[in-house]
Amino acid sequence: MKALVIEGPKTAVIQEVPYPTPGEKEVTIRVKRCGICGTDFHIYQGEFLSPYPLIPGHEFSGVVEEVGPGVTQFTKGDRVAVDPSLFCGECEFCLTHRGNHCVNWGATGDTVNGALAEFVKVPAQNVFKLSNDLSFAAGAMIEPLACVVHGVNRLELKVGQSVLIFGAGSMGQLLTQALSRAGAGELVVVDVDQSKLDVALAHGATAGYLSQNIDQALSHRVGHAGFDVVIDVTGIPAVIETEFKYVAPTGTFMQFGVAPEKSSVSINPFDVYHKDLRIIGSMAINRTYGAAVNWINAGRFDIDSLISTVVSLEEIPALLEGGKASNVMKIQVSFD
Ligand SMILES: [Zn+2]
Ligand SMILES: [Zn+2]
Image 1 (cartoon, rainbow, N blue to C red):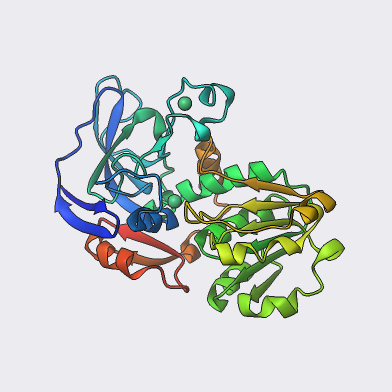
Image 2: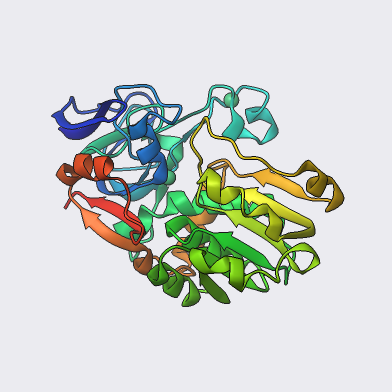
């Protein structure tokens, strides 16, 4: 079968690789759609935890091709999407509902071969059936939404609180839609691209500002007039450093965007103390995939407006090399 293989940092090629035969309690999926994520760019750049060579791809949907021994809940042709999380189930973190910090943490497409290939093999317990009227494109957006569900759980947002989001790519958009449904009051979005702000404004944001204008537009929103919640979805250290000043006393700063593994920012510890701040992270998915399936199956999210680009597998090496353009939201690979 055909696959995209990242052989090492900055080396991505299309290759023929062996078909992944499902083992005990495993399912092989014929991939229909697979999203490209910021993490895939980090893997390509050598900035993530991944081993090489690796077939990336962790945001995907497809149909069941073959089931391994012991799998009774799926049959060939089932329309499905997959939680890529691979938790050992036995370590202290798994046993205390913190599987996303499993000491043996892995994920399909991050630490083992993923779905930028015609077929991918996954544990049957990670497979979720899609409702018949849900598109494969929407199915491939369940994984990023599951990360957003975890983030929303981490925030413990109170109804009516004000939120400021930096970065209106597909994750910023999903957070905007999720937080508007979860009870946010004011919901302000910042991005470098006006077309992304327009999408956010059409889906729950109450205001949107271009990054170059915020020093002026938000100059009055520091100190006590700041936001209850500030979320970074850019992962860009130089930007992150500028965001803390917008957190109101007793507010929460959440690092949602994935920054390069070895980056750092400086913060003012006096402010953290004096303003009673809470600084939290949000790491991937922690048994939140099912909630995301429910949220998407119920039709509460507009997904179509978030998929800006659909490409073929062959286009991915050049795309990884070129980096992500600022006006692009979700890129998906179609295998049709
Ligand atoms: Zn992702
Ligand atoms: Zn574990």
